[in-house]
Image (cartoon, rainbow, N blue to C red; front, side):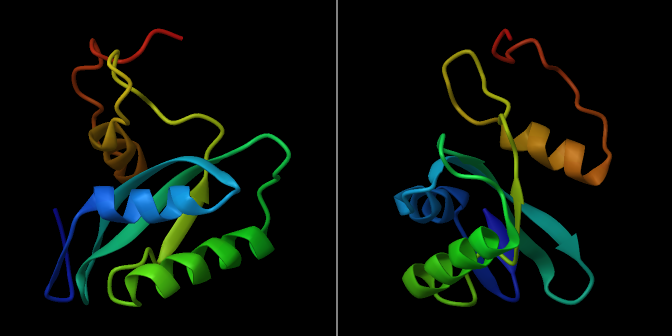
Length: 115
């Protein structure tokens, strides 16, 4: 759970809404520390073939999320990623996304999907 400005936000809820957009094939959401609101919601997004990362697409995804979730729950930042880290069972490793974003040690990566 991500606590942002007094709201409890489930990452799965935000990921599901982002994946409703036709350009998004996969999403991973983390809470990024912020001195004012506690955490801001940051999304990492992989695009379907035929779509290119751009500022216009980023704004379109932010607008889509705000419409479906509301401004308090929607991500404040979206970063495009070619590939998201997965466990062997196929789940996105949010822990690893958070560690990489904040420059923390990645810890045990033995369950990371083989390249």
